Image (cartoon, rainbow, N blue to C red; front, side, top):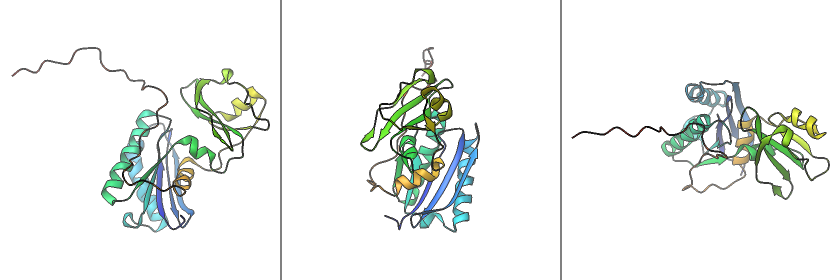
Length: 216
């Protein structure tokens, strides 16, 4: 539906991104590169995006949030914000993976890549029939895609294209702008809540020391 007013945001990478869609068009958006500080920056950036679009919170009919994969802390920041805003505003929130965001405006077939670790990426082969399950590997271990004419889109796509002898191109939209476009095409279940999309365990491990004894 194109009559929705959708506020989207994403902090799953080294950035803070927002986008506002009204009547099927993105009328305001921000993308600020940052390695840390997303928790402090997200809400002010959302407010700025609403002001730029001349929209208030009460006008919103839907929220859209990036669910990863990506930075664990960043994903939790935006997903928690989406859940809280959805509850307070009484509107649904749609979770969108970054793989689905990369598909918006992309030629088919293409090889999607997202950052996994400093040395590895998540890879998914996307065709008109769907996408393969993401695989985590180093760039030098990425197998050649089965489809001729495939282009590489996403994180380190230039390096991947060079390794595979393929072409590459940037994503059609910044993450938040792609996320609102995906959210506009679905019918959300009000009972559903966005959840982080993790493809590997968290880097932080639970403490090995036993919990302290609480005395009466």
